[in-house]
Image (cartoon, rainbow, N blue to C red; front, side):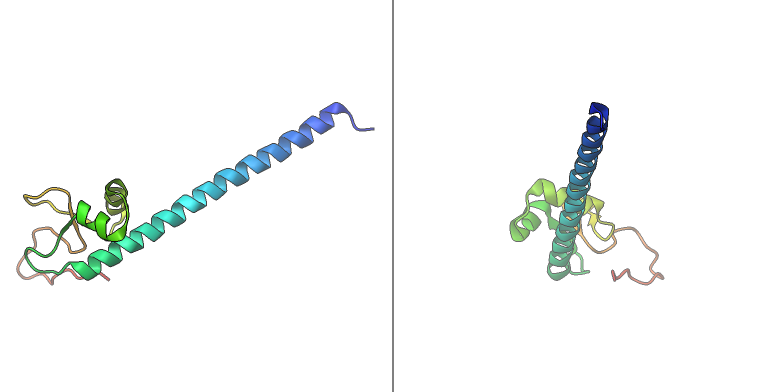
Length: 113
């Protein structure tokens, strides 16, 4: 005959499994959303920037407007994506996909893959 402790243990184990399932589902959904947003922003930058002076970077506000993401989300996505670079020039809050570091004139230009 099962005791009350058996019921408590079974209920506790079931609750722990349910809680873990919820946490893992939320984590997976957030990672999927981040990947989708990274692809959206990178794809938009790829189509709307050029590797020419003055055309390499776009502002956070512009990116947010065209991709229907919030400015905060665009800043986050751009900061975690290794393919996207922050401008170090005079204008702040500008993002691009072309490397913006001083290079020797003998180095090959950077082209993202």
